[in-house]
Image (cartoon, rainbow, N blue to C red; front, side, top):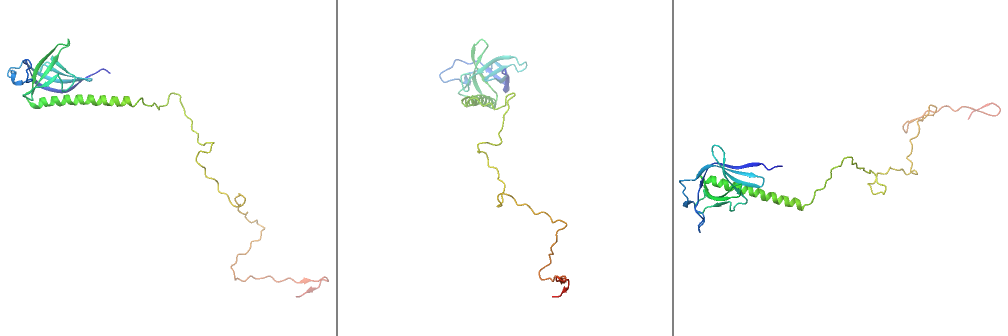
Length: 220
C-alpha cells in the first residue's frame, strides 16, 4: 500500500523570521526583528508513512512556501530558543537538498506546546511499532493450521490396544452366568390353589363308601 498523508496538526498563523548567525549562547528570539516577520502564513504538520514534516503554506491559497522534514524529535530540524517558549528555529529543505535555517513563532504559547506534543506522539508511535515488529520477528513464523483444499482427517473411536476408556460390563447373575427367566403363566386346565387366610375353616367333601371284593358296601 502506498503511503498516504495524514494531518497531525494545523495552526492558522505562524511567523517566519530571518535569524543572525548562531552565537555562543544559542538562539535567542530577542535578537530577531519580531515586529517585522519575513513571512506570515499557515502551518501544517503532515505525516507520510514513517516521515513527518512541517509545511509552511499560504493562508489563503494553500500554496507551499517551504517545508521542514523532521527525522527525530528533539533534533536539529527543530530547536528551541533560550529566551522564549513561543519561538524556535527550523531547518527548511527543498527538493534539491538545499537547506536554510529560519526562526518561527506563534502568537500563543499553547500553539507551540501543541506542536511539541504532536511531534512527541508521532515518534513515540513509531518507536512502539518498531518494538512490536521486533517481537513478532523473534517469535518465529506462525503455524498454519488451516485445512488445505481436498484435505481430510480420520478419527478412530475405539482402540485395539485396549488403551481406550473401559466400557461398562453387563451384569451377570450367580446362576452360571444366565439371567433366570420368569415362570410361564398357568394354563386353563391347571388347578387354582385357594389363597384363604390362615385360620379359616375349609369345608370337606363326604368320604365315599368303599366296596369290598364282594360288592357289599362297607361303613367305617
